[in-house]
Each structure stands twice: as structure tokens, then as C-alpha cells.
Image (cartoon, rainbow, N blue to C red; front, side):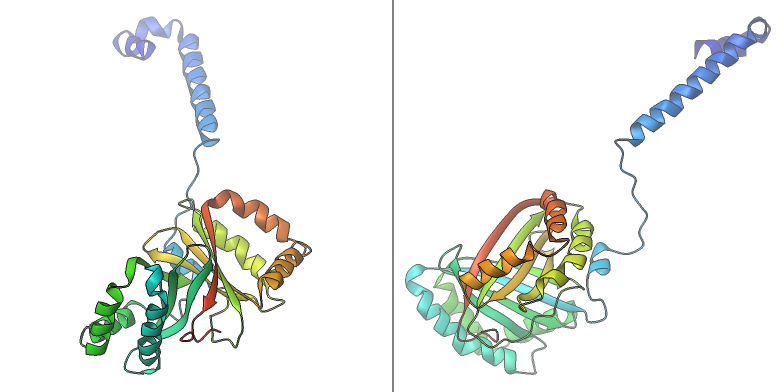
Length: 278
């Protein structure tokens, strides 16, 4: 800076040693290039995108929206809660007046105890969800159901989900089956990376029709992924998971996706009588 100022104020003086000045500028330019290169090692470049990550991962043409509900029930009320759901939920599922479907309803067997899990599908996305909610507010039977249900619950929460384009769409199943819901809290910004690995890996987990559905959250806990699996029993689950390690490429999926996870959870669930998935 001092050299440049001197050049501006006294150009004739600096001219006598202009070689030093230009060497100084050359050295400064070299340092800038080195600093830029050094910073590039730590600064991650972001590719410009013109679409949301969700649109890159989901089945846009189907516009299915899912809602998953977790209800923690008072232990002494679980049987009465299941009976209440059995009387009300299938009627909503079967009524074409409501653009929604009950995909499955379960009780957690291993994991968080005295818990009910419900999975709903809304064909038509957010407008369908809004339509259902508005219509249910006018449904006296459903209003009574919610009031009675509230007496039985300790807590409840839900999430709105989209389905991964490379997973199966969940459909009704004949039983008996047990279901595993594996939930992953990912590090923010890693959803695309997760999807890229699992798009290749899901083909390795189809041999026993165990893959039911794969979803990622849009509202609720963000960067949350749910994988839903079906097995005949716990031993079948163990055998199927062990067999996956014999598939070429499976160990790479595990190796590269584990660092993306902040927290993970597994529920073993039993379908209730009201569930289309048995």
C-alpha cells in the first residue's frame, strides 16, 4: 500500500526503481493466488440449482404426501385405544369422500413401549391433506373420536413426508408380518447424498420383498428419513440383514452413509386389526 501511495504521489522517484515496484506487485499477486488456492481446500463450492432437493428425490408425477403419527398411549389404555381406532380409522380409509388412505397402523413391540404408529397417504399432495382436514372438522364421529382419544394419550407428534422415487410405494400386505421402522436423523445438507447411495442400494434389499417404503420429512423433524421393512419374524429379519452383507456393494453403502447420520432409531412393530398391512 505504501509503495502504491508513493508511486501516486512521487511517480518520478518510484520510476528510478520501478523493477522493485513491479516485483512487489508480482509477489503480491502470487500470494493472492496461493491464498485463493489454500482457501479452496476448505471452502465447499456450491453448484447452482434451480429446483428444490425434495423435487430431485421424490416421485413428482404422483404427488403423494404422507403423514406419520406417533401416539404415546397410557399403558392401561392401549387395548381401548386400539379398539377405538379400529372402529373409526377404516371407515375414513374406505370413504371416497376423503382423498386419503390408511397405509398401516401398528403398535411398537420393541422400542418405545405403549406407542401407536399410523401412516396415511394423501394422493394429490397438500391440497388433498387440507381437504381431508377441513372435512373431518365437520365429521361429528371423528370429533368424538378425537375427544375420547385425547383421554388415553400421554403425548403425540406427527411429520409430513414425501416418498423417495426409488423405493416401492407401500401397498397392503397379507400377514402375518412384523414391521421395522428405521428412522435416521441426517446431518443438514446430506439428503441428496443419502438418496444417491440408496438409489443404488435398494435393489440389494428386494430379494424377500422386505422393502416396504422409504420417506423423508418435509414438516416436523427435518432431515429425517424413515425406512419401513417387513419380515416374517425376528429370525427372518436377522437372516435377511446378514445376507445383505454378501451382496457386492452393500458394505460401501454402509461405509459412506453412516457418517451422514446424527442419530438413528429402530422400532419393531406389530400391525393392529385395522391395518391394511398385516
